[in-house]
Length: 131
Ligand SMILES: [Fe+2]
Image (cartoon, rainbow, N blue to C red; front, side, top):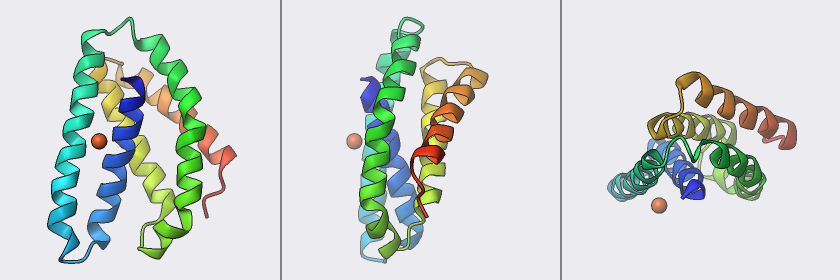
């Protein structure tokens, strides 16, 4: 469930970034997929919120473990992202925003959520030169 939060936040971020560069054919499809991914994210948030605050510490630990995977996916997809007009750095920014909002909906105080996300984003910047 914790990984769901990361994966679904990433999916929402990716489709949000794809939206402005999608062609007329892809646009309604992306719109539908985006709604679907938002719903998946909502499941995870509600499940975790029901177990908050017990899940707070495992969530933070899991986020740190999962980050390298997220970054590896981003790194692997970097040239494809650029090819369709998505800025990989903008995608990281969108992901960080989505993920922070998701952690707040789970129950983290905005300050705690920001700290968790900022630490991850800081590590991301150290680990992966995206440009
Ligand atoms: Fe999903």
